Length: 437
Image 1 (cartoon, rainbow, N blue to C red):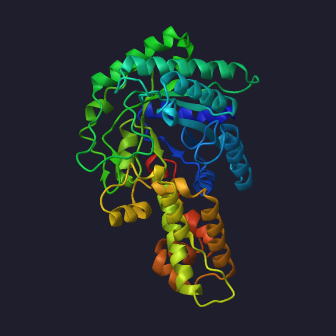
Image 2 (cartoon, helix red, strand yellow):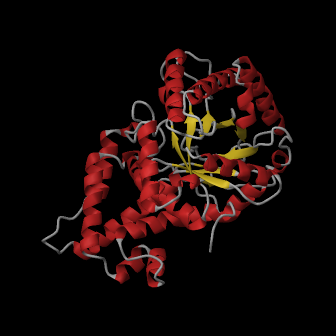
Image 3 (cartoon, rainbow, N blue to C red):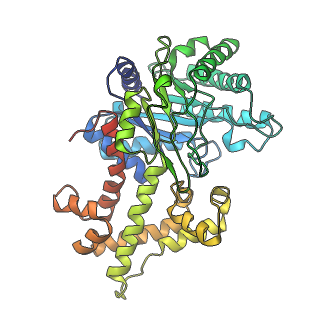
């Protein structure tokens, strides 16, 4: 972890609290194409690339990406070197670090795993740590009392501080995010009313409870490095619904941040919010915008469009083996439905549609599948060797067609995928005040 990357984040927090319209978007994804796009966007803008892995994506058992924290950190650093993004512009973070992946186990076991996860992230150089012990484990009363959540989070902070003490001199100490009103990782909700905005009283109560817990676990000095608190600004998304930000409902919360500590709000599940709403969130001190599924959603859109071009363009080419990306994804999801079945409802046809096109984007769990990867590589190979006609690109990826026509990108499949993901990232960069035109 480079000292300057932590300093950049602290500077953004301080400037936002000073009234500037500036913030940072946090890319919560383990997908290599998404990470590459984020690093390229940061390079072009000269901004901070804040890249976070969740406890489900990356952990000591591999998570659904198959990577440990050390392996994930190494992969991001290697990607940054390949792309040319300076080290001081890259900051790693851990999102929802706590017992979530092991919540079906007894609390003692789940929290032991959570402590090991936090320790591994700090030792891997993660500079931003979201302490999230908000979920009940087997045997717990649900929902957990706020003092229990805070006490468990403070214990995780103690582990992080002890791990940092083992690191060589010259590293920046971890920056922390706290909060008990934490949305479900991945941001899923059912149809219905938008989530209620966190009350000012609840926010103040959270800060007070965490202050006491940090004192009990003898990590009072770490309180000075708590830069943000997770609250609910009233934004969320689900299978077929997006709840947009209504700043009037969050007006009182926005105006009530304490003078000390001078922290900001971290907004989760901001995926699919309009650019204007993202900008309003930053103006209202929700200065850290978390985004993940919307980026892999964009990746999926690009892949499906390229697959359609391949069918139209190369179906009659007997020298090529056409890819079967969509079939491989569907087979993988049916073979292991645990990542999507609790989230998708309705008839078999409705569930089938959701598996491919839902805002919840549960399909993101299946891209690492070996057969899916094989078919994806075949798709890229075919369209690299036989570039699709411009008219097909215009039909299926019209925004990429415009970028190709203007000379912004090459008519290569990987360039089109990257551009499509960065369309989302540019909305966030614009909202955070970092986008260079």
